[in-house]
Image 1: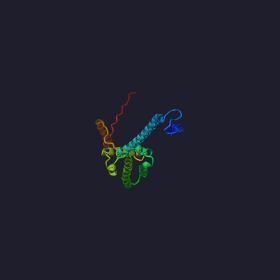
Image 2 (image 1 turned 120 degrees about the horizontal axis):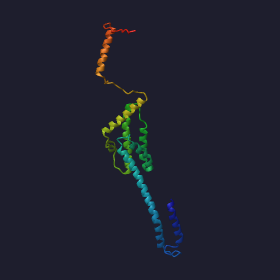
Image 3 (image 1 turned 30 degrees about the horizontal axis):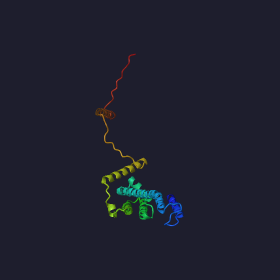
Image 4 (image 1 turned 30 degrees about the vertical axis):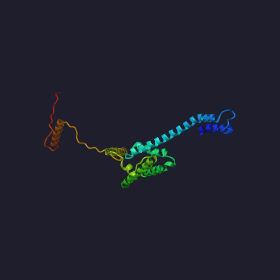
Length: 232
């Protein structure tokens, strides 16, 4: 590290200047003075490096906690954007041999998510149950590495998702699918006429006219004709 270069250089200078531990160096500065100078130089450097290490450790743990928190709070709603976003961050934040169990559980879960059986409804039920189990495994491993004492049953069963939310999500998906089918000309919008606005007087007049025309065509009524002769 670059920050260690001044320390190495100072130690090299001290090694050259010291003749014996109990003697005074040639330039007349005692060992205690040299030690004081080293402490003055090394103190701020070490303090800065230690603070940077602590900050990096805190930031890394904070990001891991954020990913774990988002997955835990949305584990009953896996289609939520927050859940998908946090899931995609697992491989980035939990890297290294220390988190190998987390990464393995994450990869297994992703592989299962990408194997959804679109055509078989019976297999879809089995797929959903297995998805819940593998998500619980992932959250369990993440909790273990972060110091949380959660068992898999607690993770799987303790999540709360109101039925109203589930109904709303199902209805939105249903409407979306139906609209897509309409736009693709696979289905039509069903329509039924239950009422026509009408004028009662006009309707009675139309009935009377229809009756007269029927009687005329049946020979029961003739159409009156009058001839007017114009004066020449």
